[in-house]
Length: 510
Image 1 (cartoon, rainbow, N blue to C red):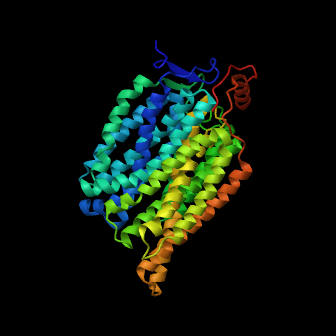
Image 2 (cartoon, rainbow, N blue to C red; image 1 turned 60 degrees about the horizontal axis):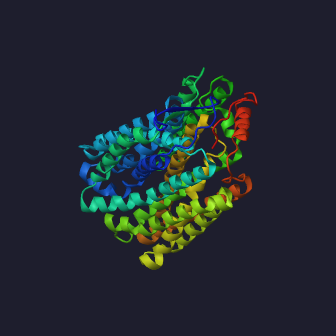
Image 3 (cartoon, one colour; image 1 turned 120 degrees about the vertical axis):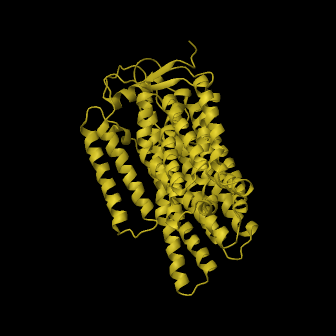
């Protein structure tokens, strides 16, 4: 049987598997699907006014076109990652792609507001299944650390570019064709992925001897994350002290605390607490929240700002993001080249400090009479570049020291932190800008001036969060390089983490 069709089980059942000859083609397929998944978060933003008029959305209901996707994806990513480890990463990836493709067709064909929101919920579930499984496959496909760092760099770079491409595609498709086609374009990509993945990618899963799905851990982790993300989303429209915000937030946190206590006691936990013992992984996941909060705040507020203050059309708004898209691609390429030479820590620290400076420059460029070239473009160029520089290093840091047993879990944690960061930005910085506008308009400030100053304030606070994150990275991250693999040393480390004898067989380590 060909090596691309056999099934791999990590976790002490033999020596590390040699690199698959079709690994780069397999990376192309799963990375293209990941590009589409990330793009779908931002692609709807510039189309929201057209969607509202077409399906007669209420102002409050319109927000759920975005929130439904973020809520389900953010809540179920952790579970999706663990299911991939247990039942097969290729299998869960294909299931997620199928769910996402069918839901995309339903979104495009939506005849009512309720049908569109319901289909967006299902789309989020598709990402929760496909995203962690796809990222978890990379350590299996690329056993050599240097190649793996490059592959993860490509993956992270495409994720960085996809967020900005979504706005460009959304604006152009909405203006030239119809908002429905921002969803229909997903279908051919999903079909191609379903056809090619079984041909270019082996199945892989963790060794399951004596293991079962930890139902209590799965329910409490998923329920806790859903409740926390829901509370954050509610904070965008309600005061932080209101029951609609506090009840889901406190309830979700209580579930997560119970989950930690349960996982510490159960013999077969869904999320082994040793997973969080690595300070590089923990730090990377925490600072991921900050940069995704800053990114989604910037994208959301800049889109509204140019449409409301400068009267940009959806297409012109999308085209305005081209400088950010191009420089994000350049930053991702630079990150992939630099990480093996100077290390993940140096790249990530530079990216966060640079991103903070870019947000400050972007804030200074906002003005009711600002031109695109002299006002907006410097911020777009710099913020795009440093975001592109950051994402590949974040992916490498989040998977640092992860054994093959937990690659899907690690991927789910990182992606969940990204979604939580997006929800946090929309729940804190965006409402802060809106309240600033309302307060100052009530005091007699002209609306364009108030909207300009409110957006600039949110950008400056986001810059402060990135500075704090950069300091945390500089202090806490270990040195993560692309040295050649040492299977025996990796096996010893993995065996120690699992509490197994030091003589255990080599285990794949990220």
